[in-house]
Image (tube, rainbow, N blue to C red; front, side):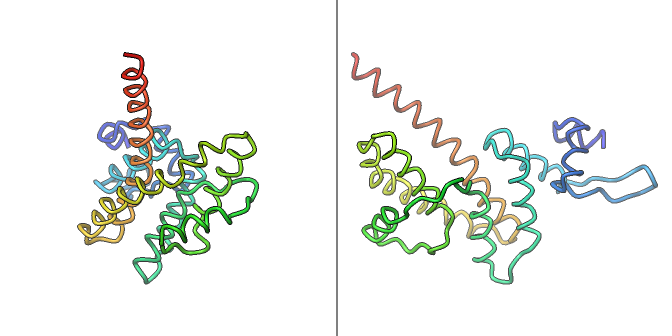
Length: 199
């Protein structure tokens, strides 16, 4: 385990915690108190760190995602969709989804009725209305168009992976690290626009 810690940059107590939580499979036992860890363990630790440290996902959500990956469906499309669904934080209070339905219909997007991002978006819209900020709700269409343009570049990346586990990992990385990159870039762009406006 010391070698795994050194190779992954993850502390031994953290590795043990991840194993207890079912996020990291055990190594291959070579003696009662000795195990061998391979490159898949190093890769899994990197993925966990990305989700927890960069994506700020709760450990329970990471565990639920890996559980979903272990229960692969025979249909690859279903497995990848469920992987993406597991990354969406469900809102605590349900909200009216009619504005989301209207937007998706207007854009001509084909999205399943039970996609959890519908509820997440509906909750966000309801919150903005509750706060009296309809001008931010008016940004929905530009956000949607930008998101679709990104999706057209992201989804083909899945085709390059032959292995279903690698495709699922790509879904996770695109959604977790892609969201982190997008959030950071938006803040940088806002500062640029603000600075130029003041010049």
